[in-house]
Image (cartoon, rainbow, N blue to C red; front, side):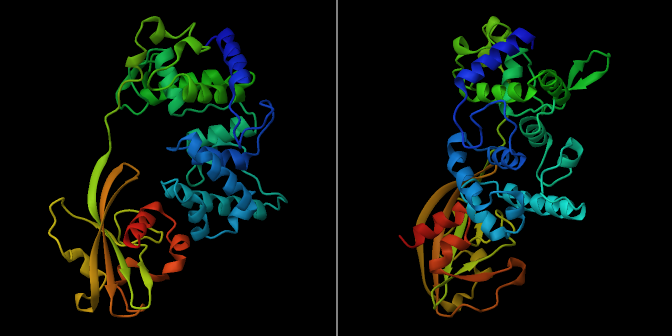
Length: 374
């Protein structure tokens, strides 16, 4: 992008930058790298409107990386509940502990995020985009970023008929060597970053993609880049970026709300299709036309001779990563008290009903529990 276009981009951003809890009023001010890391991780696969409140609550409870490093996984999941993609939360905690341990070993008084891309990308859950965001927005280094918004802008601005995830070659680069599709996009991102105020260009492009250069109905008349956009000049904005094949998969199954005679609920954290490693209700897949009654898979969690009652509570829809879920709920009351051994491969525990909202820190389980006790 030419310098005059980048100047218009900066001017547009200064007038139109949204007020966000992770964005200082002074757009030239360096950021807290911890806050950048948390906000950018939350924003992966999640809308800004959703992240606002989560970020504020998170920062009140975990105001710095040292506080976060002392937390346990269960509490971290509780503050992440509703954002989905729980591996993000697990990696955040792992990274906080690693960073604080490294700072302690180096006798650094105040723990802080690393300042090089190599160090950042070596940490759990931090990839090229997040590393670039931390280095650019927090440390004001000339580092590139590339998220979905920038991919859409570059695809339209340069009329790129491929995506960075495509495996085919994007063509020859300036040296005559074949260039991968990913490298082609990163090349444009690095050009934007190799300028004064790269941090502002990066954030302005993210804002532009979110509010103006939208995937549907882009507001090209209000875009500061419209003077150089090839797709607009050719009347083909709807063609870029090229459509990606949907990776969404349908999943149908059953969630079990197993209640003991003394009012406790069964929680498992292993051997499940989803939410591995965190407390969830037992759940398993079956066909749409599964027979009524007790599914055979359910008997792995209790002895059918100990059932006091069983009730179908309806179903709910849910999304986890690429899965589009349709889940039935069975409420099973037992004649036996909590404590009976469950197959060890499920890593089972019993939870008091009144503690369910705290223990089951995922909306999948909470939706099922709500149906069972409505």
